[in-house]
Image (tube, rainbow, N blue to C red; front, top):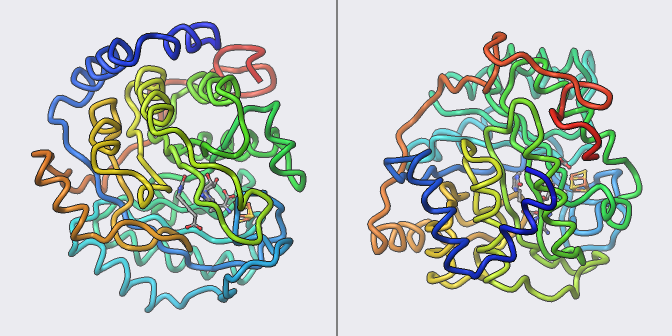
Length: 341
Ligand code: SAM
Ligand code: DTB
Ligand code: SF4
């Protein structure tokens, strides 16, 4: 969708936008189920990058305790517990700028992924920048989806991150697509962006070919010591509008109501589900930040009469195996519409 189309949508009266988004949601996901995902930080803190929202950056003085790469046994314990609790997707995050094939740490992560992938959940990882061969190796190890967010518009990105570029992010996403993994790509609200920045991000993401399988929408959890520690909370209606626009712009994707739920009321979350959110991170911790207790989430889903999704470990990347050939954008394959980024 173009920026102009997204702006028109976003400017609709709240209930008109909600109705449009809910219609798309019902068509695309007639069973209305919610996917539960569990996150685990497999390597915490000490990251070389300077993302202004992130407590894991080594550039800021935060309360976070750095941790080395977890052992395979520790990760497996957490993955088994996630499966037993009803999660159908297990997402592992590492605070690295990126990974390089042939290094000890990459081989260790590949080994962990191989084992986790035997459990029958979708396996998502987010390890930073990837080259083409690393992407293929991760796919072969059993990764079903790779998370790499664009976070905001190309215009606002340099105000938030200076240690890598938007183009770097797009290159990694292209490598993920080429390797046949699903792309999980979304953003974060509340990082001093304008509404136009949010919609520009959706313009870029919706132009990927194929469109991403997953679009996480995070709301800033302000982290003491980071440059954005004092940013105000996102207006809940603006969050709902963004979820609705994501649902319409990327109709086939799981739209994940991600970080920031501890500061949302049940009613706001209910509106997000109605607007098209169909996944949450489940369990009382995200990577380093707090998340609602699992019991509280269960209660909410029961109150709303929302069922949860069964496992789909065979998740295929949209367009993988040549079903939808990647078509070139300005410089490659990430986007299908020229000039958006
Ligand atoms: N290092 C990897 C990378 O940069 O892609 C992955 C980890 S990073 C924690 C994944 C995403 O979490 C970020 O792109 C951002 O959208 C979200 N995130 C990080 N810190 C956050 C915070 N304080 N509040 C909300 N979302 C946050
Ligand atoms: C995403 O977009 N959100 C998740 C997942 N992808 C990896 C991470 C949220 C992290 C929130 C901050 C923290 O826990 O440190
Ligand atoms: Fe590092 Fe990722 Fe945090 Fe940026 S968002 S500082 S790359 S862990």
